[in-house]
Image 1: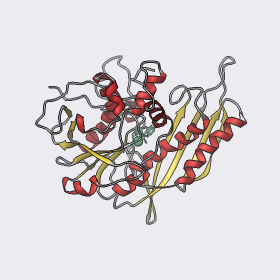
Image 2: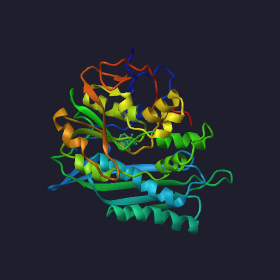
Image 3: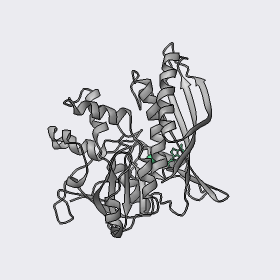
Image 4: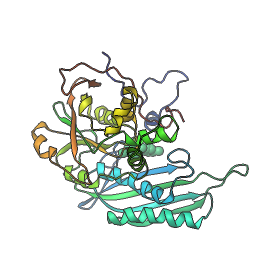
Length: 345
Ligand code: ADP
Ligand code: MG
């Protein structure tokens, strides 16, 4: 059976075929760099004296990352949370952040609520707002402008313990924190594609609107994980970035991938789509030596534990097994993780 396709920069783009998000970055913005590691990890690392800073930037756009009627308290939380999730993947300690806003108008009740959500999370992580930029978002032909929120977060990392995405080796275990897929289920519900029964509905909405960055787990894993990434675009796609940068393949065990009980109420195709390719989970997927298995299995933090979901293999590609080990048959699925230019709007 064919391995699952992995996202590969610049690959498979025939004449006239659309340019994907990662191929676009690779082609036009990747340049040799004097810094310790260039484009490609969740954070860039910069050495300053004996200190190493981890820096990341993520933006949220109305109509792309959130709906126009999104609760501003939750939006403030999420805008910082998605950045702290990249800080977590680097095993770093959050320090401070910059906030850039393009606002259609100076709506004070909205701003007060947004600031509350933002600073509640910032305080919980002892992460200080140190600057930014604010501008009005002009609309075209009388329409309101598009609300855009961009945050640059800065953390401190122990350079000896940093792993990035390129250190996975054959024989390593693959792990994921918490569970995946509920945010994607919430999105499908909001798009009217399905109905999530209560009380799971509120939980799924919460996963989508108020993700918890796994900062404590990320720091606990630093020094033991061989590679790590946060799951923002979907488990397979994000794990695919580790496989590509590490030059390895993987076997995943479908029953071992942690998901909420509510998925039992939906057909397998929906389960596979949400759990494997859904995105917006902000869990960490990471690899570690099999020798560290028992130490990792007991880890908890940020209110969740970790699950062992597969292993790294030398053969390229990603094989999804029906059972809990590599002797079980393969599931034949083709899924596309989220890509800003290849996924349907
Ligand atoms: P993440 O989901 O972890 O925020 P992305 O998938 O957005 O990362 O980006 C993948 C990599 O490409 C990251 O290392 C990111 O810093 C880099 N990147 C994204 N956009 C640009 C850009 N316009 N210029 C340079 N690097 C970029
Ligand atoms: Mg990331």
